Structures are given as structure tokens and as C-alpha cells.
Image 1 (cartoon, rainbow, N blue to C red):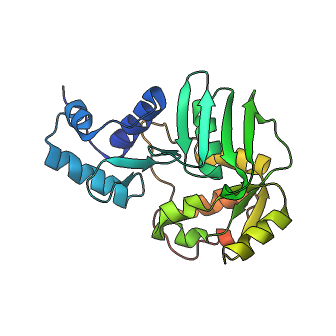
Image 2 (tube, one colour; image 1 turned 90 degrees about the horizontal axis):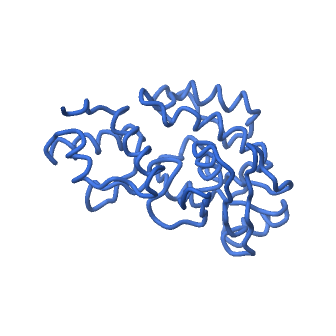
Image 3 (cartoon, helix red, strand yellow; image 1 turned 180 degrees about the vertical axis):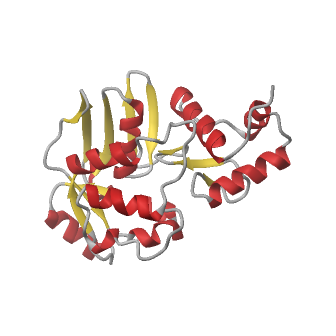
Length: 229
């Protein structure tokens, strides 16, 4: 019997498949699962992308990103006893860890050009203390180019390293947060992503989560828009 095809069901099936198998289902599998022809499926995928539920490859509507996971290699490798995944950024990788709900490691490179570090999550807590996450792109512009936004949310050792990185790459310094604080934020932000009735956060809901986790730097200001984040 064909499955109901809508934003929530499509998002849930893709995300659950990626978690279970380490890769996203292709269009053939999605068409078969939902019992629809490819033109109808492609329309649904493009609508989900417009809703900010996935990012598709530019040349065809195959899944490239379904936050917090990437289907392509990134600077964040997530590894548990159950498999391997890629996260898009520091925030996403912590969100992926929250969804996976197991002890795991996140391997990344400080500043994307320094030494490699392994972030460990054990018994629901970050083992590594003292690392920082830098958010240089204003959240109101995050979806102008979400791949660029994610690629710049990196892990650092200290603020001087961030200052040097910003100078080297001609990047404005944004908000700097302790990694363990972003872990708790990411658990809230991505906590509903596997819900079969998932809906994207509205701007007002996103603002409420930012406030709850004391993310008050101007980078987190979403302005007056009432659309989806």
C-alpha cells in the first residue's frame, strides 16, 4: 500500500534511512517506498527543499544534506559502534550525536586547517572540555547559502585562534560558544527531527530556543520574519 507523501513523511523516511544505513535513499527507493512516479517524487523533494527540510544536488533532486547529516564527506566524521556518518558543521554534528543516542566520537580539524581533535560523547555528555564553536554567519542569512554557513561553523581551541582565523580568511568574528553549551542546544534543536510528524521550526520557535539557551549575540538575531528558519 502506498505511503502518504508529505513534508513530514518524506523527511522522516530519508533521515531514518540515513541513520540506519549511513546513506540517504536514492530517488528509485523513495519512489518505490511512497508508490509514486519520479515526477511526483521530484516535486515533493523540491518542495521539501523549499521548506528547508533537505538540500538537493544542483543537477538533480538527489539528497545532498538532510540536517544534521551530510551525504558527502565533511570536516566532521561521526563514529559509533553502529556506523559512520558525516555532520555538516560543529552544531550539526552535535545534533547528529543527539539523534544517534549512543556513545560516539566526532573527529574534526581545528579551524579546518590545524590539528585534528576527537570529541567524545559518553553517557550523554561531552567528555572534552574547553573547546569552542565559532558562528560567523548571521542566522538570518544562514539559508542564503546553507552549505557555506555550515562549512564555517568550526571548532577551535581558544579565542586567539578564532581571531587569527578571522584575520587570515577576512571573515567577521561572530559568536563564540563553549562546545558543551552547543551540545545542550543541539539536543533541543534537533530533538524532534526524527518525529514522524516533524515540522520545521518557525522563526518564532527558533527565537525561543535561542533565548532558552542564552544565545544573545547579534549573530542569532532573526529579525521580524515569520517564515520557517
